[in-house]
Image (cartoon, rainbow, N blue to C red; front, side, top):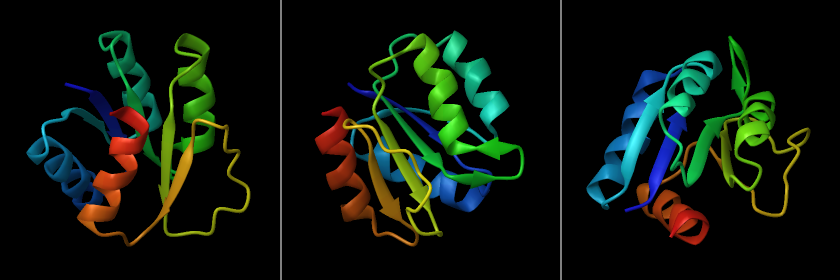
Length: 115
């Protein structure tokens, strides 16, 4: 069962994503800030995918992805945002999903990235 971390400062979005993924058999860890996500990473060495908001009050999803990749270099990242993709540094294993999105679109993207 793939393990996905969901990071978004908006609790409704974070809960929606977590509920959709858990309902489809994914193991989900969630965090409301980049700092909390990094704490969780310490106890989640089996993480398969990071789903993160791009713009958060306590830091950017891009910076979070960079920090997490210091420990997990091959970690794929699904960036989610209500803003345009401009400025998001996508690696070949990354993807971007524009908010608002539907559950089937989220699941399709996550299946492609994490299995």
